[in-house]
Image (cartoon, rainbow, N blue to C red; front, side, top):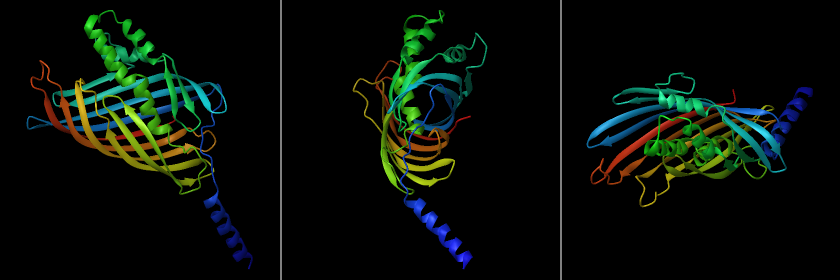
Length: 301
């Protein structure tokens, strides 16, 4: 009888936890620094003039977020890049850049290295969304102005490319892929909610994700998400126009005490066409199919 009673209590406790509403939020401490270590691998396939080209890209980096101040709804962060690398396997051979490489002849690595430990600021909501990113474009311009060997049109083109990859819009979209996974209201285990975000980098896209709290352990929240990616039409004068769509699957583990993401695995698959504007380099323009499959792994250390 005692065994049956204990078993009853066990099942009753488990049943009660299933219906318990939990408020999933960031609970960060002023003065503390929280890291985001990211590794993304992408396989890109393009078919141009009947020729199939494969490009593999691996991007890794560490970003530190220091909590400068907080109020009831917002966290004010100082953000710094600590480490950046990019490796590409192109049809003509491998190319790599590394922020820790000390070679004046490797201009791109030197530029990436110059971004390290240059602070900018970001404002987070308690649900993990980024309200604003400030001073990053100014920081990038200041860093690139330090390279006197680059002047004129070439410098402006490089600034535009760096801002496209590391500017406020790009940072907001890439970080929110991992942090903006919490609902605005309390949820119970197995509850679902929808979050819409916008990616703004090489191409702009809307991401609509349905997340579910699959488990809540004493140490972590476990969240699974599935959704769609759809590119946003580019302006008529854009050099490149993307017409693509695909899917995204995300598995997230967040620390139950702080809400900070301790592990995230994101898989994306997207395909469609790319149209290039008529230019001297591409007379008459061109349109070709492209697909990309990527996987991102994020940890806090």
